[in-house]
Image (cartoon, rainbow, N blue to C red; front, top):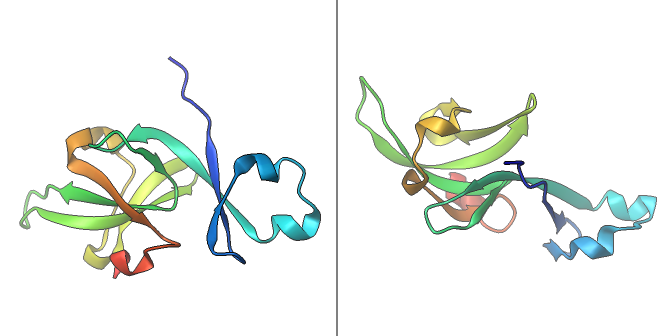
Length: 117
């Protein structure tokens, strides 16, 4: 099964989501105000699509320290989607180690950045 390639866009000037069809033929000055985010191909426990830039609530299982729930940012780097829970010093790209029921989209870095504090 092929992974679905999808994007969404955030307008930094208007501070709002943009209709992707409106981005079909942008001028050069318009492209600087948009941030494109790619769909990971994964969904959360509620069936919501997970995009880079989303903040997801994950359950981090640890072997030595107690397991915890943490908010993590979804990032794309080095050709891989990562999730980073900086507040607990945790970064991982092994999505297969986390059940879909262990993750939930709770916001994004543009509308709810305070979730990562």
